[in-house]
Length: 283
Image 1 (tube, rainbow, N blue to C red):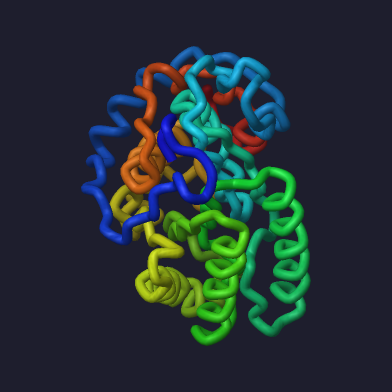
Image 2: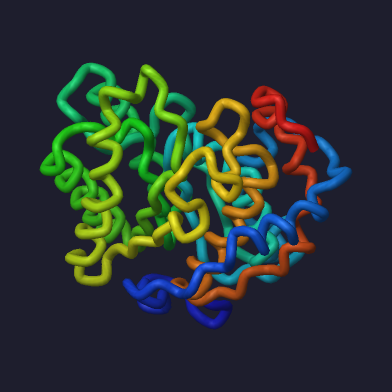
């Protein structure tokens, strides 16, 4: 997926080995100063995708040919503004296909996930058809309920769907969240989902990779490095930027592009996205 490669034959197969993650404390320190005094933007501006007619991303970086489709729930949605900025600065086309209050591909056999999964599969098909990604990155959602068999079936279906579309799948665990009364009954299923996803990637024959974000977040939602917002579930700008830096490095090593330096995108207008204001985040 570098600037000298195009089409399905030119894409480098995602490797299952994981590069070393950057230390979360160092990331937070480096990004903290960069996020001071940033401008604002509307909620929808982070969803503007693609390159301009000159063959460059909107940040001016030459395009690499890589196109990342980002899928998940509202947690993925609060990560998306920073991730889109980091990807575009790296010459990677990016489309945010996350969904507030949904996004799961797992039909857990209950009324909630059944409807959400049905909608997600339809939206995913539309997004793949229109955007034609080289990578589909799916962050495991807080709605990936159901038995391990149901989780496995959904992730295997996702890997096959992505492969059939000529793309590759990156499976990413969600960051740790505060387990409230809504999630309490589903906590055991939420804990099995990353393990199942890892196994699916391992046995996918190279069609999928598992990028273990616990290297960045840890496993304790109350820990400082988890970067949770006041609600204990979503993130503010600093958490989004830390994830964008980590994820672009991980995916860049797998997919063959060089991530842009943090200072080329961390102070962008994405920090004023309306979803951060709704979480009472400061700029």
